[in-house]
Length: 125
Image (cartoon, rainbow, N blue to C red; front, side, top):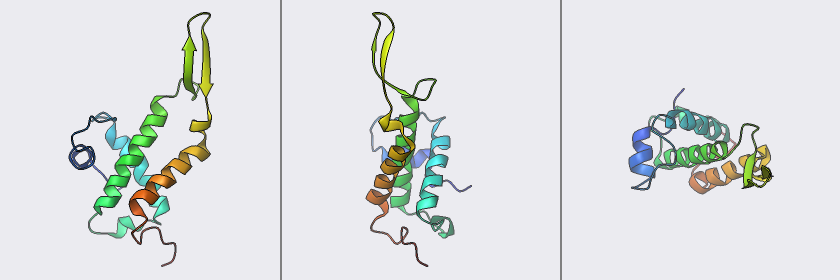
């Protein structure tokens, strides 16, 4: 599978000196998942290109960070712990941000931000 962004681009092209959210070891996995999301939105058009456009690589990095951030705040049951009190072991969970629908909406916004001005999102041929 062709992955749209590599670790080098993530560190030098996307982050531009900011601290990475995703570790070096974990980035290839999250970039692969992000590539899959972009592939669905672009009807596999990027795979046919000789060179991956910078906008696609930036999109891949941002989606990878989004997917990673959602996964990293989940507990063992797949829920986000919003607050926690140790006065009897209580916790409040936030689930609306983790719904599949909300995650897909966030990904769609990222894709539109980076790829709206390209022909990659056009569903016709």
